[in-house]
Image (spheres, rainbow, N blue to C red):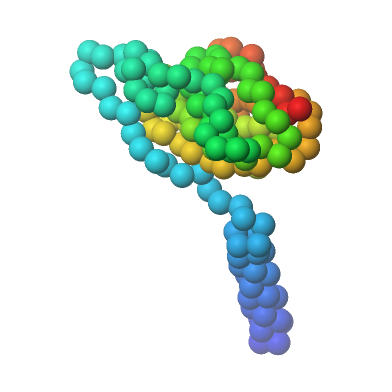
Length: 160
């Protein structure tokens, strides 16, 4: 019986080493990183977060702006059942910093066919960088249940 136990423990250790190598490879060689929590937006008692967001940079000007040649910043606010803006237009090869938050409840921010995937918490500012190398329309969806009309919360990223 001891021989089978050693074989089982060896197999488990090998699988653990393989998973750790895959994690290291994806984070270093493939440059895959978790979205960062870059700040919070606070409001006083009686204030609505949605109104405070509209007065707080960069959320006072949602949408896409070019910050350097080939580098863009996309500021997105998720609110019950919509993204603002719900369409983002970018050129092929654009390097984009997504800066996003939620104005009301927990939302998801997922762009299908990319690694852009963030959870948006009310008032928490999340950031993620991505480069669009292929032209096309990419569906932007909420992947966290946010209420009755959650299934209608969508937008798109158009890369030309």
